[in-house]
Image (cartoon, rainbow, N blue to C red; front, top):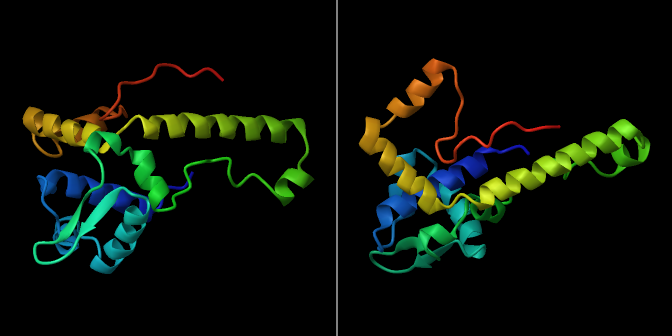
Length: 171
């Protein structure tokens, strides 16, 4: 999996839309300004998000975009798939590599990355926009913006801001 700026920007824009919508359409210009993302780039992303039925467009004065479903029904996996992100780390292990590397090690590593892809998809599918919005409000209430991330980075411990650690992973 290689998460590009396209996927990161799409998630940021969808979170911005979710937090600033209040049931009303949000203009892309507003998202562009708040998130410092090119308006032209946002237009391309939202075209894909609209085709993927994650957002709906509202035309006319006061128009913009709204979520097509409840924030708890749109997962991060949905957003990434709408914009065409590759969330399967084993997807590229095909073709000539598979034909020329027909060894035990090749099959073990391929199976490992296929399993990793399954875990990643499940994780992305269990985190909704609503989860992230609620977590951001909790974090703001507890310590203010950025303080939580700073305390984690200073301690040298990397933890998820959304999910609890899943424990040891045996290989």
